[in-house]
Image 1 (cartoon, protein in one colour):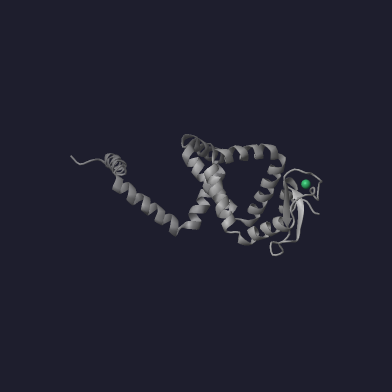
Image 2 (cartoon, helix red, strand yellow):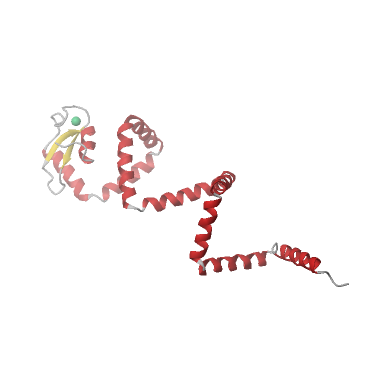
Length: 196
Ligand SMILES: [Zn+2]
């Protein structure tokens, strides 16, 4: 007995619904969809925007729901976004300033943290320091010359402190052009936040 029009329609719909579950059909449909989007890029974008404008709340809550269910994906996406952001020189500069501000606000905390880290990772820190110093021949030479010709006996020339005194070089090309400062002032001089 031949099928009626209604039956035929239902049968076809059922057939396609079943077919879409097969992986090769799924893959094919996905490819076709991507191809369509690529060739009708502007159109698709406009349609997406239109949809978003109409269903804004729904979209946001759906995204939130998705990320709540897939926290790893959320982390991944955030990381990617941040990395993209940091390539921008303006963002880079802003982050640098922020980091500096944070450091001076939480200096004691940061120093404590660093102390703990250094004692727990002695080998790693020593190796890094050794590598850093081998790449800085000029700096090493300047420091040795200054220490040999001007042994440190006075106070810090900036604040008058007697603790942890060091030499400060304006320029490593002039090894003997040095001033004596404490470590705290030296850090300040190096990041140019104090002007002598
Ligand atoms: Zn000082």
